[in-house]
Length: 204
Image (cartoon, rainbow, N blue to C red; front, top):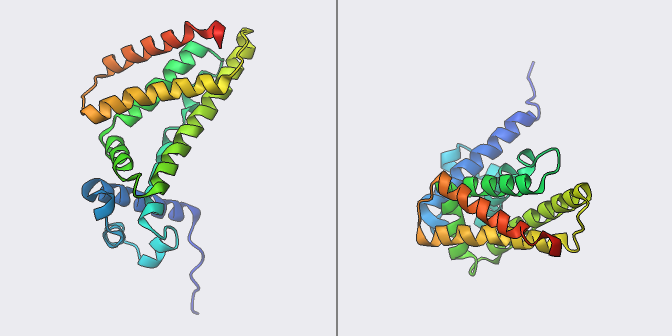
């Protein structure tokens, strides 16, 4: 009797997705955005062109998927204290994001976003989305801490924006100057930055 091949299992589909993004990340890091080849990604991932193009119809879509995966991997919920504590939470978030972002892979991807965002607005949109998600999450945490501590916060979104862009500015300086930053130096900067922000809490 002829057997009919069933639908791929969910874990198999997830494995294919991970393999595609893994090989695509390596391809972009080695060849840049303009020089990257979807054919090489297909070959390295051991899949068909149909499998790739049914998911990502262009290099831009594939690159954005990599960025979205990084956003998921960097989700801060696991590092924020279950019992709201503003200072501890902000420091934990900043250290978590910076530790991940300072990896060689993340630095390469972020450099590509910077260099190609003018030619490919989709990449700029992906970067903006990543920033917006961070601001939204931290604003919600600030509001929770304000309720817990009984300290009014007139504009949690603006405070979160200042916090996120403060982190982003420090990171961009490291990225553009190609600095090697130790964990101790990173933690010291985070401690100082969060303390400066908290010193103005009564004016939030």
